[in-house]
Length: 211
Image (cartoon, rainbow, N blue to C red; front, side, top):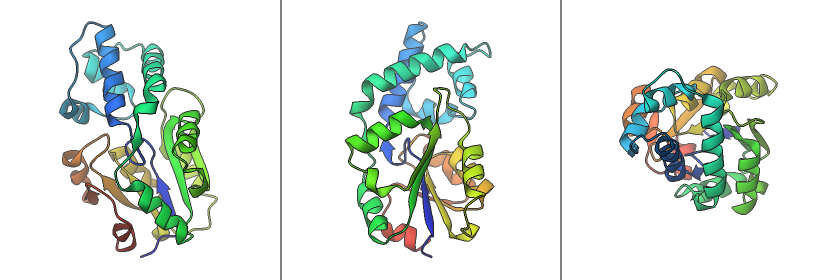
């Protein structure tokens, strides 16, 4: 079924930033004299709200989240140039644009990171809307998605979310959308398959049209 709108997550879905995000977490751990985390542990610990992730990573409920957010964003901002597009995503986005299917981004990331990267990657023309955070504390994008989609005259069955986390799955459920989950992002195949939804290593346009 051809969707009437495609709602993309940004981090780990469109933008392949897993490595720099993990490096940023290890920067935070190093600042506190703690050993680095590997990718499997990152996948296991990832949670929302994100403070739960840091409580696991630091081994304490007493987390100075504003300070941690500051350190993460400082490292992430300085290293954002290292991130590129997830494999195959440019072709899919361009094909959907050619088919005149509206595409938007809903993200917990800061809007300035997204607009800057879209410009750098020459993707601005493909997205009709970017809904993202206006502060540097990664909040729930579910509320943002629900508020925006409540004003859209698009049947729920015609909405498609493409993401890489359980939070994206929860967002899709809340707005009644179908979903494709990518295992190459921030949560990994093992956790994503528990949703019973389509989980792919790489995305092709035909995956969207045949869902």
